[in-house]
Length: 310
Image 1 (tube, one colour):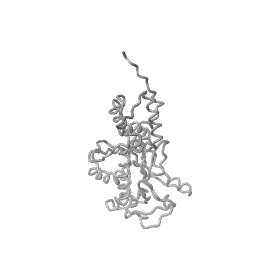
Image 2 (image 1 turned 30 degrees about the vertical axis):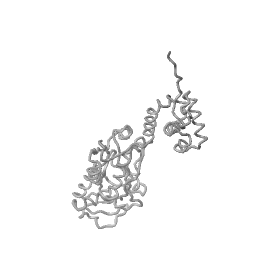
Image 3 (image 1 turned 90 degrees about the vertical axis):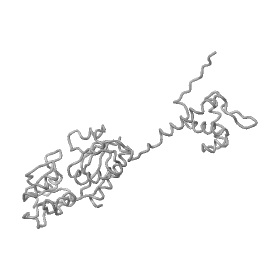
Image 4 (image 1 turned 30 degrees about the horizontal axis):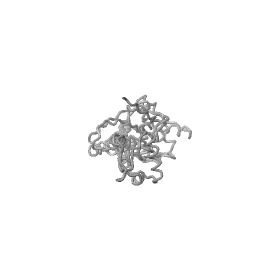
């Protein structure tokens, strides 16, 4: 004769009964099981009653020697132990060891971040996560979509950069704008005003646009404009260009100082009310809690503190 077992509706099952069942079958004692599960003895007795109803079995039977497991209870002990272990793994944060990590991390960055930050990042990765490879890409159309679908892990940006909805952004470095020209420039020793920005030709950097920037908006608000004689997608090229001409450029102070000696540059504070330049790291909010990316962003922050000095 074949006996049919009633099916249990998992969707309607109270998962609070799982740790109670595990403790009862392991301890074979209601009082001790209650202590293990963090329940009062009456609450554990009620849990046992509910479990007996669900299983259609006594599970624990009192004898002169104490409680013993029924055959049904004995049969579910191995599966229950495995289920509890697997359930814990579902809710526990995955273990992360950078030394054991094997992956490629892809960054979108300008040449300024590539020069200033990537050497320090690579040096740290080679020690702390030697199995991680770094790939740096230039900005290109479709970048937000590539970041959203995981083709790009992280994007360097400025705090003032417009961001699409659904992204995670954090400041990693505090820099300043710098007015840069060659050491022998006719106005290298002068105290610049906004009007001086209209007297000399400029080298602009356009990562995706036409070279216009917030600087032009500030000048326009004050009634001035400037001539942008050269537009390049590279900040280092802008510095090299002003080193060879009487043009000027306005870029990251940290980058200008990095090449000032090599290119023979004069680095000055521009005549703006606000000269702060905050670098951010951006990624899709879907991947912001990836344990590796959390760890990697902390590594980048350490490098940025050393580079920007704050």
